[in-house]
Image (tube, rainbow, N blue to C red; front, side, top):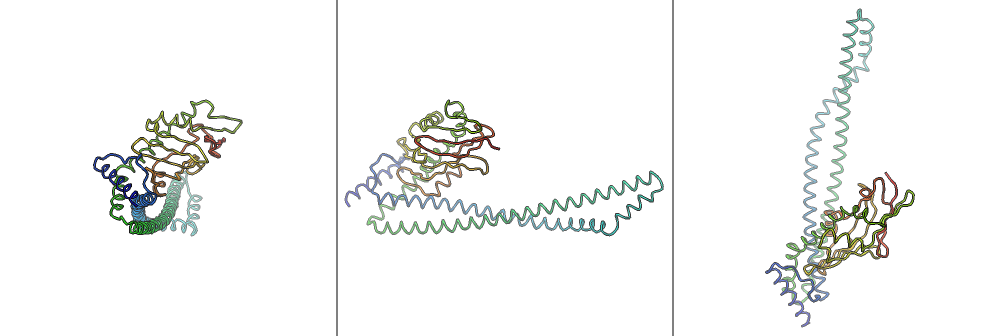
Length: 361
Protein backbone atom coordinates (compact mmCIF):
# COMPACT_ATOMS: atom_id res chain seq x y z
CA UNK A 1 0.00 0.00 0.00
CA UNK A 2 2.84 2.37 0.85
CA UNK A 3 4.52 1.72 -2.51
CA UNK A 4 1.27 2.39 -4.28
CA UNK A 5 0.81 5.71 -2.45
CA UNK A 6 4.39 6.73 -3.27
CA UNK A 7 3.81 5.97 -6.96
CA UNK A 8 0.59 7.96 -6.87
CA UNK A 9 2.32 10.88 -5.16
CA UNK A 10 5.10 10.91 -7.77
CA UNK A 11 2.59 10.80 -10.61
CA UNK A 12 0.52 13.56 -9.06
CA UNK A 13 3.60 15.72 -8.51
CA UNK A 14 4.59 15.33 -12.15
CA UNK A 15 1.10 16.25 -13.31
CA UNK A 16 1.00 19.35 -11.11
CA UNK A 17 4.43 20.36 -12.38
CA UNK A 18 3.24 19.80 -15.92
CA UNK A 19 0.17 22.00 -15.45
CA UNK A 20 2.21 24.82 -13.91
CA UNK A 21 5.01 24.77 -16.46
CA UNK A 22 2.74 24.05 -19.46
CA UNK A 23 5.00 21.09 -20.25
CA UNK A 24 3.64 17.94 -21.82
CA UNK A 25 2.87 14.93 -19.66
CA UNK A 26 6.08 12.87 -19.41
CA UNK A 27 5.77 9.61 -21.28
CA UNK A 28 8.76 7.85 -19.78
CA UNK A 29 7.62 8.00 -16.15
CA UNK A 30 7.27 4.80 -14.14
CA UNK A 31 4.01 2.99 -14.96
CA UNK A 32 1.10 3.65 -12.64
CA UNK A 33 -0.61 0.79 -10.80
CA UNK A 34 -3.16 -1.04 -12.97
CA UNK A 35 -6.12 0.07 -10.84
CA UNK A 36 -5.06 3.71 -11.18
CA UNK A 37 -4.52 3.37 -14.92
CA UNK A 38 -8.04 1.99 -15.35
CA UNK A 39 -9.47 4.85 -13.30
CA UNK A 40 -7.63 7.38 -15.45
CA UNK A 41 -8.89 5.68 -18.62
CA UNK A 42 -12.43 5.92 -17.33
CA UNK A 43 -11.96 9.56 -16.39
CA UNK A 44 -10.76 10.29 -19.96
CA UNK A 45 -13.73 8.35 -21.30
CA UNK A 46 -16.05 10.57 -19.27
CA UNK A 47 -14.45 13.66 -20.85
CA UNK A 48 -14.73 12.21 -24.34
CA UNK A 49 -18.31 11.03 -23.84
CA UNK A 50 -19.17 14.55 -22.69
CA UNK A 51 -17.62 15.85 -25.91
CA UNK A 52 -19.59 13.33 -27.96
CA UNK A 53 -22.82 14.33 -26.21
CA UNK A 54 -22.10 17.97 -27.07
CA UNK A 55 -21.51 16.99 -30.71
CA UNK A 56 -24.71 14.96 -30.92
CA UNK A 57 -26.71 17.69 -29.16
CA UNK A 58 -25.46 20.20 -31.73
CA UNK A 59 -26.38 17.82 -34.55
CA UNK A 60 -29.83 17.31 -33.04
CA UNK A 61 -30.44 21.06 -32.79
CA UNK A 62 -29.24 21.59 -36.36
CA UNK A 63 -31.49 18.81 -37.68
CA UNK A 64 -34.49 20.16 -35.77
CA UNK A 65 -33.86 23.63 -37.22
CA UNK A 66 -33.73 22.15 -40.73
CA UNK A 67 -36.99 20.29 -40.11
CA UNK A 68 -38.72 23.45 -38.87
CA UNK A 69 -37.48 25.36 -41.92
CA UNK A 70 -38.53 22.55 -44.29
CA UNK A 71 -42.02 22.34 -42.82
CA UNK A 72 -42.48 26.10 -43.26
CA UNK A 73 -41.26 26.01 -46.87
CA UNK A 74 -43.44 22.99 -47.69
CA UNK A 75 -46.51 24.74 -46.29
CA UNK A 76 -45.76 27.72 -48.56
CA UNK A 77 -45.21 25.37 -51.51
CA UNK A 78 -48.54 23.67 -50.88
CA UNK A 79 -50.34 27.00 -51.15
CA UNK A 80 -48.52 27.84 -54.38
CA UNK A 81 -49.11 24.41 -55.87
CA UNK A 82 -52.83 24.62 -55.08
CA UNK A 83 -53.00 27.56 -57.52
CA UNK A 84 -51.09 25.59 -60.14
CA UNK A 85 -53.35 22.59 -59.56
CA UNK A 86 -56.44 24.71 -60.29
CA UNK A 87 -54.88 26.05 -63.48
CA UNK A 88 -53.92 22.55 -64.59
CA UNK A 89 -57.44 21.37 -63.82
CA UNK A 90 -58.94 24.05 -66.04
CA UNK A 91 -56.64 23.02 -68.88
CA UNK A 92 -57.63 19.36 -68.56
CA UNK A 93 -61.32 20.23 -68.33
CA UNK A 94 -61.05 22.32 -71.50
CA UNK A 95 -59.62 19.37 -73.40
CA UNK A 96 -62.28 16.99 -72.19
CA UNK A 97 -65.20 19.39 -72.64
CA UNK A 98 -64.86 20.01 -76.35
CA UNK A 99 -62.67 23.14 -76.62
CA UNK A 100 -60.29 21.30 -78.91
CA UNK A 101 -63.26 20.69 -81.27
CA UNK A 102 -63.99 24.43 -81.24
CA UNK A 103 -60.46 25.24 -82.40
CA UNK A 104 -60.55 22.51 -85.03
CA UNK A 105 -63.81 23.93 -86.34
CA UNK A 106 -62.34 27.45 -86.37
CA UNK A 107 -59.41 26.21 -88.45
CA UNK A 108 -61.66 24.44 -90.95
CA UNK A 109 -64.00 27.41 -91.31
CA UNK A 110 -61.30 30.03 -91.92
CA UNK A 111 -62.19 31.96 -95.11
CA UNK A 112 -58.72 33.20 -95.99
CA UNK A 113 -55.06 32.46 -95.42
CA UNK A 114 -54.52 35.46 -93.07
CA UNK A 115 -57.54 34.35 -91.00
CA UNK A 116 -56.22 30.79 -90.92
CA UNK A 117 -52.81 32.06 -89.71
CA UNK A 118 -54.45 34.20 -86.99
CA UNK A 119 -56.51 31.25 -85.74
CA UNK A 120 -53.43 29.01 -85.83
CA UNK A 121 -51.29 31.55 -83.94
CA UNK A 122 -53.98 32.03 -81.32
CA UNK A 123 -54.42 28.29 -80.92
CA UNK A 124 -50.64 27.78 -80.74
CA UNK A 125 -50.33 30.48 -78.05
CA UNK A 126 -53.09 28.90 -75.97
CA UNK A 127 -51.65 25.39 -76.39
CA UNK A 128 -48.19 26.66 -75.40
CA UNK A 129 -49.66 28.38 -72.34
CA UNK A 130 -51.50 25.18 -71.44
CA UNK A 131 -48.29 23.23 -71.91
CA UNK A 132 -46.38 25.62 -69.65
CA UNK A 133 -49.12 25.42 -67.02
CA UNK A 134 -49.01 21.61 -66.99
CA UNK A 135 -45.20 21.58 -66.88
CA UNK A 136 -45.13 24.10 -64.08
CA UNK A 137 -47.59 22.06 -62.06
CA UNK A 138 -45.67 18.82 -62.71
CA UNK A 139 -42.35 20.42 -61.70
CA UNK A 140 -43.81 22.00 -58.58
CA UNK A 141 -45.43 18.72 -57.62
CA UNK A 142 -42.15 16.83 -58.03
CA UNK A 143 -40.33 19.43 -55.93
CA UNK A 144 -43.01 19.12 -53.25
CA UNK A 145 -42.61 15.32 -53.25
CA UNK A 146 -38.81 15.67 -52.92
CA UNK A 147 -39.31 18.14 -50.10
CA UNK A 148 -41.54 15.74 -48.19
CA UNK A 149 -39.09 12.89 -48.81
CA UNK A 150 -36.23 14.98 -47.41
CA UNK A 151 -38.39 16.03 -44.48
CA UNK A 152 -39.13 12.39 -43.71
CA UNK A 153 -35.42 11.54 -43.95
CA UNK A 154 -34.58 14.46 -41.64
CA UNK A 155 -37.12 13.22 -39.11
CA UNK A 156 -35.64 9.72 -39.25
CA UNK A 157 -32.16 11.21 -38.81
CA UNK A 158 -33.42 13.22 -35.86
CA UNK A 159 -34.88 10.09 -34.26
CA UNK A 160 -31.56 8.28 -34.76
CA UNK A 161 -29.61 11.20 -33.29
CA UNK A 162 -31.99 11.36 -30.33
CA UNK A 163 -31.43 7.64 -29.73
CA UNK A 164 -27.66 8.13 -29.87
CA UNK A 165 -27.96 10.97 -27.40
CA UNK A 166 -29.95 8.85 -24.96
CA UNK A 167 -27.51 5.94 -25.33
CA UNK A 168 -24.45 8.11 -24.70
CA UNK A 169 -26.08 9.80 -21.71
CA UNK A 170 -26.92 6.41 -20.22
CA UNK A 171 -23.38 5.28 -20.92
CA UNK A 172 -21.79 8.26 -19.20
CA UNK A 173 -24.08 7.87 -16.18
CA UNK A 174 -23.03 4.21 -15.86
CA UNK A 175 -19.36 5.09 -16.30
CA UNK A 176 -19.54 7.89 -13.77
CA UNK A 177 -21.20 5.49 -11.32
CA UNK A 178 -18.33 3.01 -11.80
CA UNK A 179 -15.83 5.80 -11.20
CA UNK A 180 -17.59 6.98 -8.06
CA UNK A 181 -17.65 3.45 -6.61
CA UNK A 182 -13.98 2.87 -7.44
CA UNK A 183 -13.00 6.19 -5.90
CA UNK A 184 -15.00 5.50 -2.76
CA UNK A 185 -13.28 2.12 -2.38
CA UNK A 186 -9.79 3.45 -3.10
CA UNK A 187 -9.11 4.87 0.35
CA UNK A 188 -7.49 7.94 -1.20
CA UNK A 189 -10.33 9.62 -3.03
CA UNK A 190 -9.08 13.21 -2.89
CA UNK A 191 -5.67 12.37 -4.36
CA UNK A 192 -7.23 10.36 -7.18
CA UNK A 193 -9.72 13.11 -7.92
CA UNK A 194 -6.89 15.60 -8.15
CA UNK A 195 -4.97 13.27 -10.43
CA UNK A 196 -7.99 12.83 -12.70
CA UNK A 197 -8.69 16.56 -12.80
CA UNK A 198 -5.10 17.27 -13.84
CA UNK A 199 -5.17 14.58 -16.49
CA UNK A 200 -8.53 15.73 -17.89
CA UNK A 201 -7.28 19.32 -18.08
CA UNK A 202 -4.12 18.13 -19.82
CA UNK A 203 -6.10 16.08 -22.33
CA UNK A 204 -8.47 18.94 -23.15
CA UNK A 205 -5.74 21.56 -23.47
CA UNK A 206 -2.86 19.58 -24.96
CA UNK A 207 -3.48 15.88 -25.52
CA UNK A 208 -6.44 16.03 -27.91
CA UNK A 209 -4.71 18.72 -29.97
CA UNK A 210 -1.55 16.62 -30.26
CA UNK A 211 -3.46 13.49 -31.30
CA UNK A 212 -5.39 15.48 -33.91
CA UNK A 213 -2.15 16.93 -35.25
CA UNK A 214 -0.82 13.41 -35.83
CA UNK A 215 -4.01 12.34 -37.57
CA UNK A 216 -3.93 15.48 -39.71
CA UNK A 217 -0.31 14.79 -40.66
CA UNK A 218 -1.22 11.26 -41.79
CA UNK A 219 -4.28 12.50 -43.71
CA UNK A 220 -2.22 15.19 -45.46
CA UNK A 221 0.45 12.66 -46.37
CA UNK A 222 -2.03 10.14 -47.77
CA UNK A 223 -3.02 12.63 -50.45
CA UNK A 224 0.47 12.27 -51.88
CA UNK A 225 0.68 8.48 -51.60
CA UNK A 226 -0.44 7.89 -55.24
CA UNK A 227 2.58 9.87 -56.48
CA UNK A 228 4.92 7.84 -54.27
CA UNK A 229 3.40 4.60 -55.56
CA UNK A 230 3.86 5.66 -59.19
CA UNK A 231 7.48 6.69 -58.61
CA UNK A 232 8.50 3.54 -56.69
CA UNK A 233 9.34 0.52 -58.89
CA UNK A 234 7.74 -2.81 -57.99
CA UNK A 235 4.75 -1.52 -56.04
CA UNK A 236 2.37 -1.93 -58.99
CA UNK A 237 2.22 -5.22 -60.89
CA UNK A 238 -0.19 -5.77 -63.79
CA UNK A 239 -1.43 -8.90 -65.53
CA UNK A 240 -4.13 -8.51 -68.16
CA UNK A 241 -7.06 -6.60 -66.68
CA UNK A 242 -5.87 -7.17 -63.12
CA UNK A 243 -3.44 -5.06 -61.18
CA UNK A 244 -1.91 -5.70 -57.78
CA UNK A 245 -0.53 -3.02 -55.49
CA UNK A 246 1.91 -4.18 -52.82
CA UNK A 247 3.47 -1.74 -50.39
CA UNK A 248 5.70 -2.80 -47.52
CA UNK A 249 5.73 -1.20 -44.09
CA UNK A 250 9.34 -0.17 -44.76
CA UNK A 251 8.20 1.72 -47.86
CA UNK A 252 5.32 3.30 -45.95
CA UNK A 253 7.70 4.47 -43.23
CA UNK A 254 10.05 5.91 -45.86
CA UNK A 255 7.18 7.76 -47.52
CA UNK A 256 5.70 9.19 -44.32
CA UNK A 257 9.05 10.34 -42.94
CA UNK A 258 9.71 12.23 -46.15
CA UNK A 259 6.29 13.83 -45.87
CA UNK A 260 6.54 14.91 -42.22
CA UNK A 261 9.55 14.82 -39.91
CA UNK A 262 7.38 14.08 -36.86
CA UNK A 263 7.14 10.49 -38.16
CA UNK A 264 10.86 10.02 -37.55
CA UNK A 265 9.87 9.12 -33.98
CA UNK A 266 7.12 6.70 -35.03
CA UNK A 267 7.00 3.37 -36.80
CA UNK A 268 4.27 1.90 -38.99
CA UNK A 269 3.95 -1.86 -39.22
CA UNK A 270 1.70 -4.24 -41.16
CA UNK A 271 1.01 -7.28 -39.01
CA UNK A 272 -1.85 -9.67 -38.12
CA UNK A 273 -4.25 -7.92 -40.51
CA UNK A 274 -3.69 -4.56 -38.84
CA UNK A 275 -1.74 -1.37 -39.46
CA UNK A 276 -0.11 -0.17 -36.24
CA UNK A 277 1.49 3.23 -35.73
CA UNK A 278 3.43 3.46 -32.50
CA UNK A 279 6.11 5.64 -30.98
CA UNK A 280 6.89 8.64 -28.84
CA UNK A 281 8.79 11.87 -29.30
CA UNK A 282 9.60 12.45 -25.65
CA UNK A 283 6.45 14.49 -25.17
CA UNK A 284 3.65 12.18 -26.18
CA UNK A 285 3.30 8.47 -26.70
CA UNK A 286 0.73 7.36 -29.25
CA UNK A 287 -0.42 4.01 -30.56
CA UNK A 288 -2.96 3.89 -33.38
CA UNK A 289 -4.11 0.52 -34.61
CA UNK A 290 -6.67 -0.26 -37.28
CA UNK A 291 -7.65 -2.07 -40.44
CA UNK A 292 -8.44 -1.32 -44.07
CA UNK A 293 -11.68 -2.15 -45.89
CA UNK A 294 -12.79 -1.69 -49.49
CA UNK A 295 -15.86 0.54 -49.78
CA UNK A 296 -17.77 1.73 -52.84
CA UNK A 297 -19.90 4.54 -51.44
CA UNK A 298 -19.73 7.39 -52.08
CA UNK A 299 -16.80 6.26 -54.24
CA UNK A 300 -14.46 3.31 -54.49
CA UNK A 301 -11.88 3.66 -51.73
CA UNK A 302 -9.67 1.77 -49.31
CA UNK A 303 -10.71 3.21 -45.96
CA UNK A 304 -8.89 3.03 -42.66
CA UNK A 305 -10.86 2.26 -39.50
CA UNK A 306 -9.33 2.97 -36.09
CA UNK A 307 -9.75 -0.02 -33.78
CA UNK A 308 -7.52 1.18 -30.95
CA UNK A 309 -6.12 4.51 -29.86
CA UNK A 310 -3.77 4.72 -26.89
CA UNK A 311 -2.42 8.03 -25.64
CA UNK A 312 0.39 8.03 -23.05
CA UNK A 313 -0.57 4.52 -22.02
CA UNK A 314 -4.30 5.24 -21.70
CA UNK A 315 -6.80 3.80 -24.16
CA UNK A 316 -9.39 6.24 -25.46
CA UNK A 317 -13.04 5.28 -26.06
CA UNK A 318 -14.75 4.37 -29.33
CA UNK A 319 -16.37 7.82 -29.56
CA UNK A 320 -12.94 9.44 -29.87
CA UNK A 321 -11.90 6.99 -32.57
CA UNK A 322 -15.12 7.60 -34.51
CA UNK A 323 -14.74 11.36 -34.18
CA UNK A 324 -11.20 11.24 -35.56
CA UNK A 325 -12.33 9.05 -38.45
CA UNK A 326 -15.03 11.60 -39.30
CA UNK A 327 -12.61 14.52 -39.16
CA UNK A 328 -9.57 13.01 -40.89
CA UNK A 329 -9.59 10.89 -44.03
CA UNK A 330 -6.80 8.32 -43.84
CA UNK A 331 -8.08 6.41 -46.86
CA UNK A 332 -6.57 5.69 -50.26
CA UNK A 333 -8.38 6.24 -53.58
CA UNK A 334 -7.23 3.90 -56.40
CA UNK A 335 -8.63 6.08 -59.20
CA UNK A 336 -6.25 8.85 -58.15
CA UNK A 337 -3.51 6.37 -58.97
CA UNK A 338 -4.88 4.87 -62.21
CA UNK A 339 -8.08 5.98 -63.91
CA UNK A 340 -10.82 3.41 -64.44
CA UNK A 341 -9.57 0.97 -61.81
CA UNK A 342 -11.39 -0.19 -58.71
CA UNK A 343 -10.15 -1.84 -55.56
CA UNK A 344 -11.56 -5.34 -55.19
CA UNK A 345 -9.85 -6.49 -52.01
CA UNK A 346 -7.30 -5.42 -49.44
CA UNK A 347 -5.26 -7.51 -47.02
CA UNK A 348 -2.34 -7.11 -44.65
CA UNK A 349 0.13 -9.97 -44.47
CA UNK A 350 3.77 -10.33 -43.36
CA UNK A 351 4.73 -6.67 -43.42
CA UNK A 352 2.82 -5.91 -46.61
CA UNK A 353 -0.37 -4.16 -47.64
CA UNK A 354 -1.78 -5.92 -50.70
CA UNK A 355 -4.55 -4.36 -52.80
CA UNK A 356 -6.14 -6.20 -55.70
CA UNK A 357 -7.31 -3.79 -58.42
CA UNK A 358 -9.39 -4.38 -61.52
CA UNK A 359 -10.62 -2.33 -64.47
CA UNK A 360 -13.94 -0.80 -63.48
CA UNK A 361 -16.28 2.11 -64.04
